Image 1: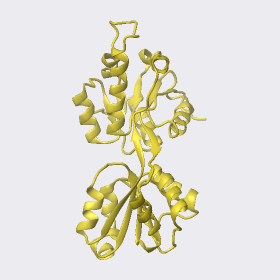
Image 2 (image 1 turned 90 degrees about the vertical axis):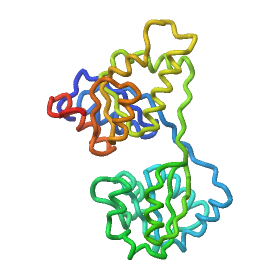
Image 3 (image 1 turned 120 degrees about the horizontal axis):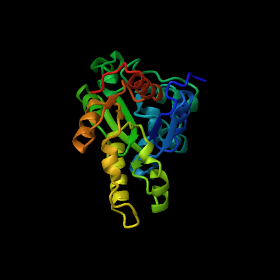
Image 4 (image 1 turned 180 degrees about the horizontal axis):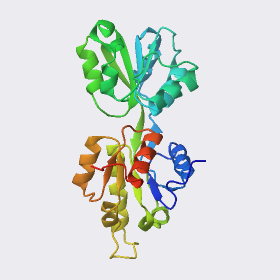
Length: 279
């Protein structure tokens, strides 16, 4: 048990339902009160025949890149269903959580993974993925539906053949009026919000807009959105910070140095100890 450095602080956790408990537990260890409002729901995608055919050729692929822990979870499930993973395939992850998930499911660590700054840029900077290492190589990128093109485009420029295996999708959760009313009943007492993706940021605003405009809302003078703009926010990229400001957030916007649970908590601790300068 940690010292109660966040005692009396109520924190809104917006991670997907299956990913929220570790962050909530960590916050509780510091004395905070976490409240969960998942703003993204992760669901597997029913693969097309073309995607199944691509995955079935994994034994002849040189590199398999997993963008996220969800890409590992759903990607490996599809691999096990449609093929077998040869030991010659180099496994690549971006973040530490993805690396741990690979080890958990396959019993081996990734062959290639950044040691800091867990993003596509850091991955592409590694010697193992330079042109002399990937030219004429075949690569599958396991990811969710949509996303950045930087990784694939750069690897193609370096001479690799790159295909996507999109194995899950992110959707906005659907809440009934009663569920929203219950979740937002303590909204007045929220001290800070953690959010780790631009999509989640927009979904949060959409959910509160829905709650504000629903006919069953009894207090026409109380706007959830107006309250939202006043709550300090923790984000994980400069882009998200700019998006939050554009949406209307008026209070402090903190930026964690990465999207891990500990990094989010560290930012909150620095803020409440007066050691950080929010941007």
